[in-house]
Length: 136
Image 1 (cartoon, helix red, strand yellow):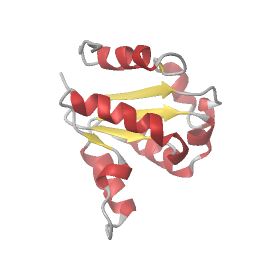
Image 2 (cartoon, rainbow, N blue to C red):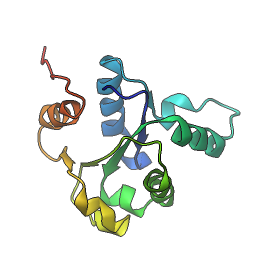
Image 3 (cartoon, rainbow, N blue to C red):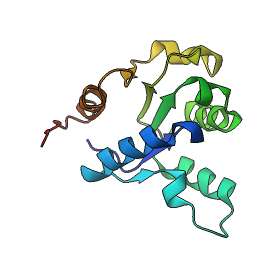
Image 4 (cartoon, rainbow, N blue to C red):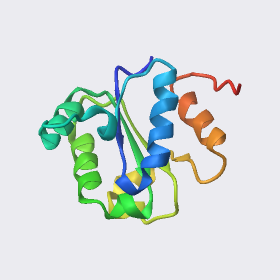
């Protein structure tokens, strides 16, 4: 079953890859909350993030040394881990990092690896929802 909406948690330093992943899932008809695209001027950004965390049913976590050091990524992950509305939490490793410093539970989750070819990471991510990556 496809997600109703995915939440993409990332460090702003990893925005280029996060944006590519958002484009990938949106191109397959999956709505994605991605703060640089979804938060408009004059909005209370922390409220918008909180609302999105409450309504999304999948949590995508882009892991890098920058995201591991981010207090906001940690807060978002802690919310997702405590919430009953997530059907899945998907850690996506982008750069080697001490991801267990975010949560020891991440080691028990299957990682989607984006350290190699982007297409390989995309293929593994989409396979979670039984979507085939067609390279054009």
